[in-house]
Image 1 (cartoon, rainbow, N blue to C red):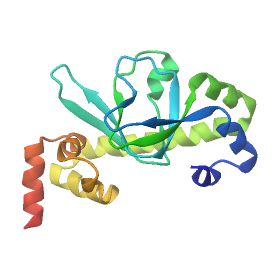
Image 2 (image 1 turned 30 degrees about the vertical axis):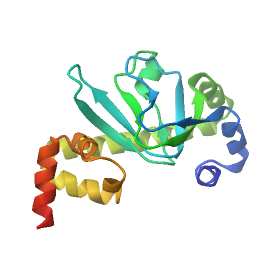
Image 3 (image 1 turned 90 degrees about the vertical axis):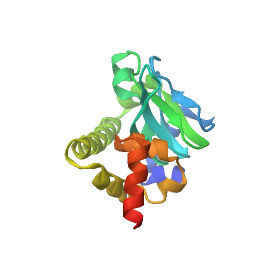
Image 4 (image 1 turned 180 degrees about the vertical axis):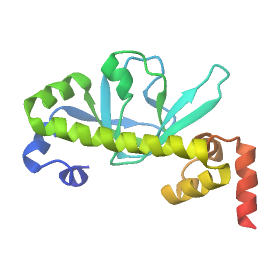
Length: 185
């Protein structure tokens, strides 16, 4: 974690950041943030794989995003508005998160202009990813989305089940099976 963070946070600021949180272990299938909870924390993934997932009243899952190590996670809009989260953050593998409170983050942000610039860069990156994801879901067919998934997340098929992949692609598992079979021939 520290080696990666040293690439994005200057040494004189890194100690400040590492002083506001703790390492949290999360088992596969457990949640970092739950739907309906007003989040008071955010985190940086040290290890493991997580997803943002909506679950409707019938229990159907819609995977909003997959989050790999060396990425920040939160239900940010819910946290800044102090309203309930609309989605879960679920561990798809056992993992560790450097977790810190929103209150401590706000205090850190006020302490030096670097933190505002850092936050802006994170938000811009997240916005760009979100915009691409929305565009892909609206404009690309399922097969192309699957091929893009394989390119974006190499070896992910060995790490998560097909139901999660189908949910991420916005298709039924049966449709994913047909696509995979077509591409294998």
